[in-house]
Image (cartoon, rainbow, N blue to C red):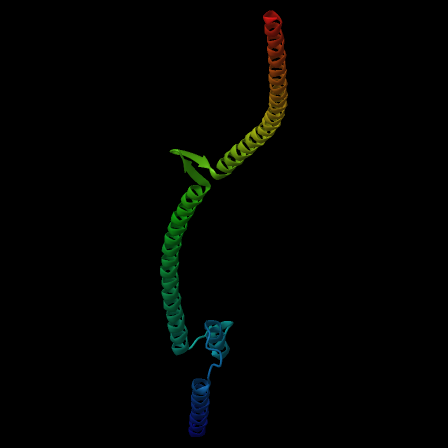
Length: 203
């Protein structure tokens, strides 16, 4: 009976040492994967099976739970920062859209003012104004060409009339000279006849 007690004590001491050694080995083992999945797999790997169930170390479960909470807090903080950043970017986009709309309106006004010309208080499109100006220039050029042609025609007519008048004047002058000569000749002949008449009467 005494020997049986010694054997039981020895077995108990061996079991205690084995469990203590296993716990010590389990506690000193390190997890090389710090991710949640790595910690979970490490916890399952280090847990003992008992009748198809896992005996999980509460310290490891608490560590995994702490990691989950830390990860959730980090994700929530990042989500809040992302939402804040998205809101800021949305406000910036809205502001930029407003500026772009204003600049487009200013550009449209500037383009309209550049493409419009005011003449005599009437606004014309630049293309219409250019067309009108060129049409007026062409009409004036045509009118000037007609005037120049008519002036040349009248000048030729005037030159012809002048030459004709000069010829008539020359002929008239020649006729006048001839008539004067003839008149003088007739006057001399008449005087001669008078002289003869006077001399015959005296006899």
